[in-house]
Image 1 (cartoon, rainbow, N blue to C red):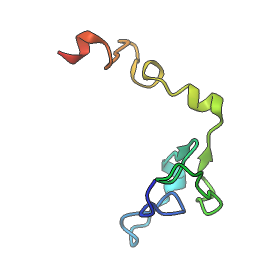
Image 2 (image 1 turned 30 degrees about the vertical axis):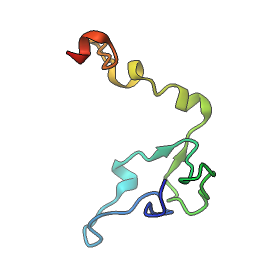
Image 3 (image 1 turned 120 degrees about the vertical axis):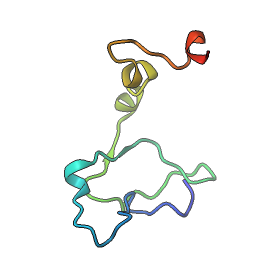
Image 4 (image 1 turned 135 degrees about the vertical axis):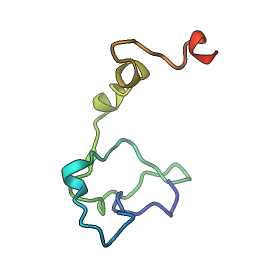
Length: 81
């Protein structure tokens, strides 16, 4: 991630809005690095941010996220037509 990304990991676009993202947003990350590949300092992340385990990150596959009941796979040859 570039230095333009807030160290908090979350930055509301409308500071004046009465927003409670911790109630409506899921913020998770795994293995975040800077542009040189060095691990980020995550100590400033919002308290409700979740650092995924390797096992949790491994579950984020095309089939598990996009597949649904129709088993759609955007990488399949017929999906590229």
